[in-house]
Each structure stands twice: as C-alpha cells, then as structure tokens.
Length: 310
Image 1: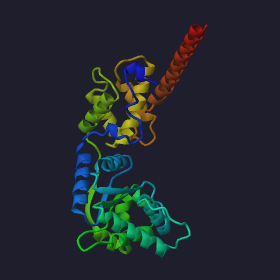
Image 2: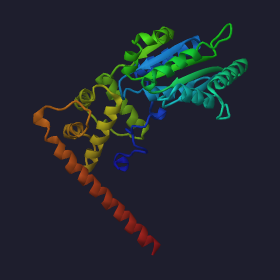
Image 3: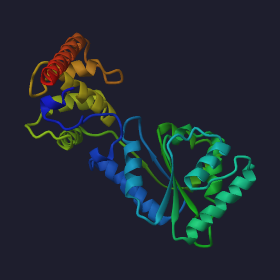
Image 4: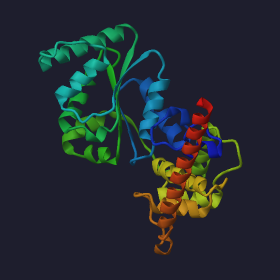
C-alpha cells in the first residue's frame, strides 16, 4: 500500500491490538497502574470498562506481558460461556489435562487442588477475561464462587474483568450485588483529548519507521479527534484512509481534504456538516487511483523479474 511512499517498515494504524504500538497515554497508564496495584493487593475482583475501541484489549495484553514471574495468568478472550464451559476454560488455562467425562463437582474440586498447588509453589493466579459484558449472570456467579477459594492468608485466584459500559449496567442488577461488592478496584477509560491523539498519531508513525516532517497538522488532528470522538480505534481507521488518499495523489503530507474524505467514508465517525458530504466521492476516486497505481507497480515489478530471468 503506502508503506514505501512514506518510508514505513510496517502499517502504523492497523486495528489489531499490538503492544509494540503501546503509547503511554494518561488513561491507559492510569488503568495499568490501577490493575498492577490491585493485583499486588491480592484480593477480589478488578474491573476496567470503556467504550468500544478505547484500548481495553491493548491494555489487557500489555498487562499480561508485564506481569512478574510470580503470577500465573489464565486468559479467557471470549467469555460468552456457560458456567460449565467457564470451568473447563479455567482448567485448561491452569494446565490441567482432564477426562471430559468428569462431572462439574469433580472438575471444581480438581481446579481447587490445582490452585492450592500453584499457591504452594509461590504463584498467584490471575484470571483475566476480555469482553466480560458478554458473560451470562450464572457465569458471573461462578466467578464469584471461585474467589471464595482461599488459604488463611490469601485468595487462591483473582479475577480481572475488561468490558464495555454494559458491564457496569449489568452490575447494577440486584441479583449481582454480591459480586459488585467484591470489586475492590475499578477504572473507566475516557476518550482521548485532541493533543493526546496528536501524540498518539506521531508515535505510531515513528514506531512504523516514519522519519519525516509531521504528516498531520494541528487543525486536521482536531478534525480527526472530533470525528473519532476520542476513540483510538476510529482514529486508526480515519488516519489510515487519509494516508491512503494522500498516497493516491502522490502527496508527501496529508491535507484537510484527505481527512474529510476519510471521515465521510468511516461508518461510525461523527458526520461532517451536510455541505461537506460530497467529500465521499473524492475518497472513492482517489481509492481507485491508488488501486491502479499499485497494479501498475506490480506489473512493472513482474516485467522486471521476467526480463531478469531471461
């Protein structure tokens, strides 16, 4: 795509949560500090919530990568599980290889024995669940019961919940009041301010290998920040499209028209005023130009290779 045009070694604004691109933005650093303090404290549930795309999964992966050796981490990325499925998932993460014909009581007993074994080895078990808003109520109750497992001095397992704001809403249910009381630490991710987004964009470009002048001016960063509502994932989508349009025109710096066209073409972005909606056709036209340019380069490379082989 545009990597060679901008002197990049990799794409800077992919949607995959990559800790290589983790930038110490205030809300993300604060969330990690809360998590680390809570885990060191050693009790109860820990909860981090935030809107879609605010960086929960990236923080989750950063936490997992940075946990000291005395922690044994069990990670469940897709917790839309029944209580039975959740027990089996935990058993697998704890390194247990079990007969699938075990009943739930036997399975729970073996999990408890394994937790005691790890505790005796000096390891503290941390169960991390991403997208926790998807957990059924019965599974949330199963988690609460797991946290009842303890020695005289310490819990055998801690639970970290990452979820969307719907998780907070569900915890207001009177049926889950016991679990809510077990949440000893929590943090709510906020949207990014425009200057944080400016630093975020520049940092990701530098990690991707960019070494030139700033590609986005302050005015355009503010435009992107407003359209993205401060959500990093939407920032990635819009800036990626703006760079693609810039490349299609052969420009070395992104202009406002590129940003506007990218915003109009992004589904969840805040819409531009109606007078600027015609920017969409610019995006489609330039995208076509970019595609033709890439096909041309590919043909030239193929012809060159053919000549060399002859």
